[in-house]
Amino acid sequence: MTIRAFRKQKQFCGENIKRVNSNLRMDFHNFSSNAWLGFRLELLGSIVFCFSAMFMIMLPSNILKPENVGLSLSYGLSLNAMMFWAIYTSCSIENKLVSVERIKQFTNIPSEATWRNKDRVPPANWPGQGNVDIKDLQVRYRPNTPLVLKGITLSINGGEKVGVVGRTGSGKSTLIQVFFRLVEPTGGKIIIDGIDISILGLHDLRSRFGIIPQEPVLFEGTVRTNIDPTGQYTDEEIWKSLERCQLKEAVASKPEKLDSSVVDNGDNWSVGQRQLLCLGRVMLKQSRLLFMDEATASVDSQTDAVIQKIIREDFAARTIISIAHRIPTVMDCDRILVVDAGRAKEFDSPANLVQRPSLFVALVQEYANRSNGL
Image 1 (cartoon, rainbow, N blue to C red):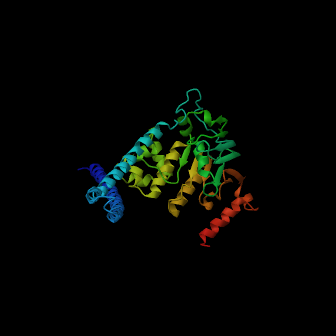
Image 2: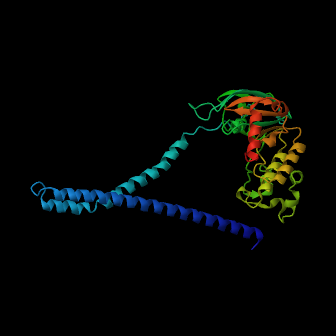
Image 3: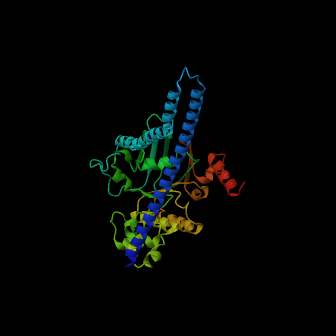
């Protein structure tokens, strides 16, 4: 048996074991629920039967004949079983109808915008400068719900590094979702290098941006298919990208090199290596506009330093919009955007923001107190 076959068999067995354990837990949960339901129904039926029997016994014989009492009690003995069967059946039907409800719900989900718009194809080098203009951007997730972003207006120059900070629920992540049109804006525009992104096809839009998420996203396959999913680049270009993100030695030491296995979610690689692979994917793409959602939140300090060094050197000329959950990661940005309750409250350099009373200063102080355990 080859090493690859052994790995596949091992992975297959592991998946089957997980699936069996999941089914056993589900069966045990269902058995426990049914047992608890049966116990309560038996108890309720016994109480009703007991009170009914006492009531009929206490009645005078001229009102209720003894033979009728016996007949009623004999039928009452089967009350528990009938009640359990009726309630269990109704609950089972209700649970199974949930799938019908979900199917009906999914048939009414509106489709995304056009994947490719042949009439609105951006230039091959777009975005070339990385200039971003946001004009009165308003976003809500569903109709008849409050706005999540409430009229954000700002301009970002090409090559500028912008850190986005704010409390949980302020709208930081929503801002990134609007750039990729995972959520369509309710009002306003986002213009990148003179093109309104709302007129572009989703593929033409999303393929031109780079993103490094907080949790590294890897797919089952090989190193090659993860760093170059569309197969557009040569082996030489891939090796150069791996060298720049300091993964060349790790990949070269494996017998299968670029064809080394990557299991689902990259579980056979360390967290730091997964994040570096995502970084190499973005470096290979060479997009002028890069989004980062706290890309170093789940790695150790040494890997964090490596990633920050790579970003400063290899992405120096690119526009970077970085969502920050930890204040120190954005202190070296050119400007800081403070989002509060869906509004852009402050947008200035870190040096200017810390020199006056501001929301950013309050966030810095709060982070310092929390780090010191106060």
